Image (tube, rainbow, N blue to C red; front, side, top):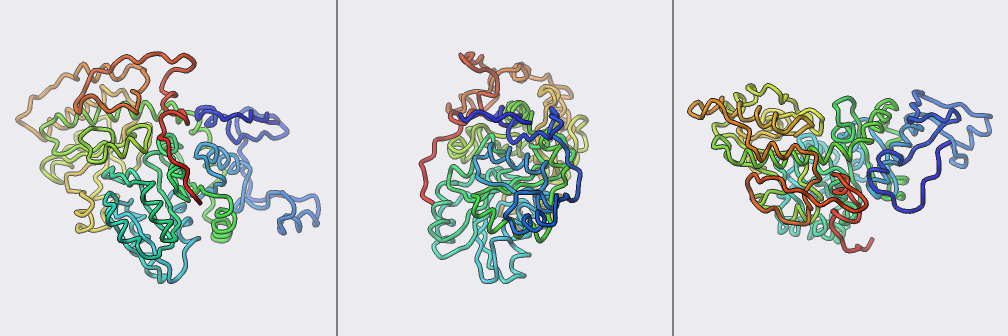
Length: 465
């Protein structure tokens, strides 16, 4: 059977490998995959007690499953949450978190900067059930104050936002929401629980698409909802149990294995993303670059106050609109065109014609999404190769530019396996800079130091409730 882990706090890298592990009587090393729809009972009396809730026994994989339970426990440890329920997809997680809590006559306040399907739930689905919805600009605290000056039941937001990487002041919005009587649901997909922990800032519920960084290799779909045990047991669980958005045990097992390397993959992706953002900012074909930790990001201070690193996404605009954007994307030879993100493979997408097509041109304009906007999910390839690919593709939309460009020495230096810079210090330059050697820590080394629970994540005052 699995050992009992120490009572002392464990670091994220250890939690990602060991957290939640349960061994069967066969003492397997890898987590067991329970591909079963149902479970048997020793007696009719045990079955009755299980359905009454007086006996602890698995009933049906739509309700719970041992493989899913391991993943739920691991995510709770990582997030610092009391309880977790898994869903078949990330959108099923968002839908379950909202619809389990809401009823006719309720009011929702949401950030305008949402993933396209989340925007559809708020703008189109909820009103069908008599639920009022109001959108606000996520970075405008005044709009949040006005919208939450009257009672509300739920607040939905994501930070950084998809695809424009806008930030929401989590602590301030959570205070306003709670004063209005609302539960705060945060989509934390872009940051992951290693870079940002919304519960520490006062959020009530955190949702994930486990499809993204948690799997990290483009294999399976999955979602997760995390929060307080009382809310999960009394509000979320009856909805999940009776509507059936259950995750497959196989998908849960794959995500469990993917989590084991998240603490190694994510720092490498963040390093590359920061270098790529600096490279893009120097190209004349690029009109705008958005990356949360760059000094020219309008909310850099807030990003550094809430996140441990800038993340693996870079958003930029190419000059020339849709035609130039398409020609650029079609010229890429390493980087794939795909609407996924958080993958080991680098991916680009054109939000205006894919993920945010159906929010409409007027709403895209409010979000700052232009026909030249490209979202870049940075993967695990050598950063020098990625920059060379980007450079050649940019050359293709600027015929007057030199045909070949040498990958800058500063970029070549970034690929060395060094720890990320201390995120508490502001960036020295907005442009590319030679990577500085980092002092070797006494007890630990490498990028894992970035994700110390007590170190890079901001200190947050304890909040009531």
